[in-house]
Length: 342
Image (tube, rainbow, N blue to C red; front, side):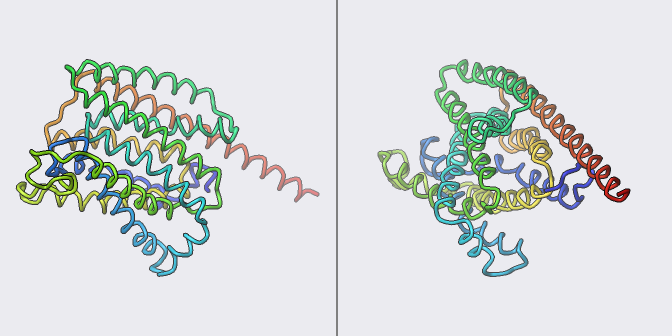
């Protein structure tokens, strides 16, 4: 990995930024995905099913392309990772992925993305608990501030005129940063491992869980005769919008994480977190443009507070990383000068 901020290759930065931008339309496409089921809860599991299929198919293909088209590249990565780490990583990734889709299907996109933005804080806390890494003071302060902003968003959910879906959606959204933190901590605990195969394998687990939930539910009489498979059948009377949105979700999400993974190899994690914050305002605007969804003022204030807090936190992390890197380089130059003098 690159030590000094100034030494980060421009291509790596642009790749990470492009990955974050590609991810921005994701929630808009999710909103445009509609199914024959009359239940929002079950419909969200239809999205889980198809996006899981997308990870299973597209990530291996894109991995091969990213490795110069070498056909055995993905299988080599699977063998190197090993079954135990592959399935554990897949399970951890699936938790945050499923939670994100279910939450985004049931409450305001701005609420979900705001809570998701606290993922780096959860990663830092898991690293402290499980890897005994030191957590900087500014991260603890940012965590406390974020708790306040999340409570404000929750206040809106509880005040939403008895709409249970907002309370459920906001509650499920809390699992996303927790799952993300656990997943990235697992990756840090296995620095020699390429976890891309785990992302793809999580598609198998996501599909299995989605099918279990869908078929365990009772068939609804208002679901147009589709019975229990209604949550898996996209609507057909919208001019193909739902099907197109599902296809683009599968491709864009796989592409976004491929670009982010490639860029993150050379870009400090705090900097990548800063790039990902672009998704919050961009995605909220896109959802408003496509569907007219306008969250209440509490969500806007909470989202703005979380965005500013995480932006400052990431910027401080970048500054500290550069300062430490510059100090390491100065020490190395002094040592080299001593060797030359001797």
